[in-house]
Image 1 (cartoon, rainbow, N blue to C red):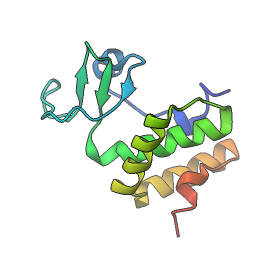
Image 2 (cartoon, rainbow, N blue to C red):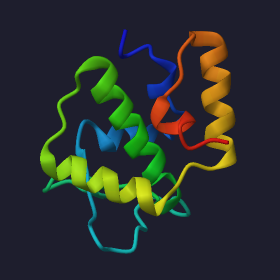
Image 3 (tube, rainbow, N blue to C red):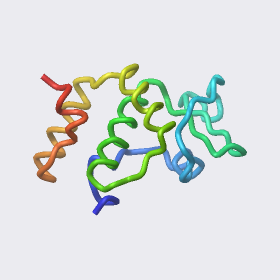
Image 4 (cartoon, rainbow, N blue to C red):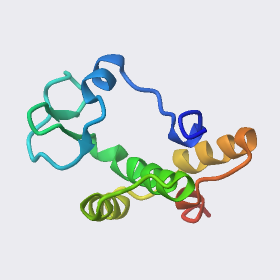
Length: 118
């Protein structure tokens, strides 16, 4: 069920998604330039992905949802990172709308999103 949960599904560029593999998210501190205009940075040796700043909060809220809903284990360092990303990239109007649309189809909300929507 977790794999088919619409709150966990996001369109992605195939090459980046493939390169990302199952690497953990993190901060790499560099200027992303591996993928042209898409500001993603992947450190293949360290197996870490730095996503664009404008989606870091979205990723954090998805991981919090998946952890609560399906028991996905998050390390304490990942929890701290995601908490920071949640604060730095707050829920926006599109994320609220997306959450509502998914709830209409799937029957449940991501409370980490809906609690921030007015």
